[in-house]
Image (tube, rainbow, N blue to C red; front, side):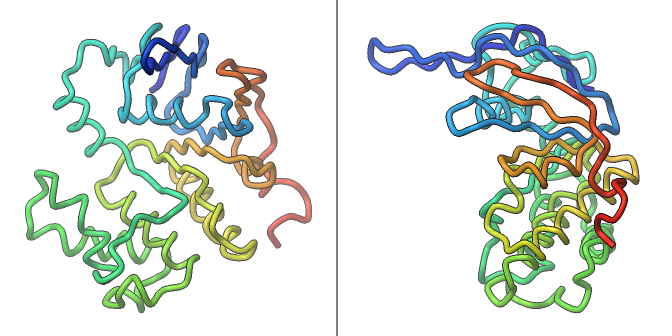
Length: 235
């Protein structure tokens, strides 16, 4: 699905250049659950922005389903992002005065999915995160954990191939964070590709693989036994 080769990103401000990524090489297969970890300033956020088509690299190559992003226009990238990618953010990014239903429907408004089908897609996405009884509740009246579950439903509603989760438990208590990670893990078990950015070790260990970034380079890349498979966890 994703193939990076010597990926670089350099920012220029006045006469000063800053290397955020200094030659990142790895690939991610469809259906993997990968955590990307690194300290503040390591380049992991820059990497996520490039992976999700929110930014372009200044060197190296990035292929998504064997297509080089260098060969795609910004409009084509936006179309792929809306169709194939779902996003979950630390700050939820919900519209507080809209209901759960309306928040989850938003990505469909930018798609070519007919309006007649939207209702069933929204209801199915909300049900998948266990919030059917809150579907007509304003987002402002939800708890933090419920808001993040709505954000996951919104990420799912277009049927994306890959879900990018950027510090999804960062604003949650431990119990709500665990619920969110269980949902992401269940999505992976159903065949979704999940790419998680986090600084929390226990959150990262829900994945099958952890890539650690330091100073714009890959420090380590290893497969692990996900935390839900470890004896005694999540019972």
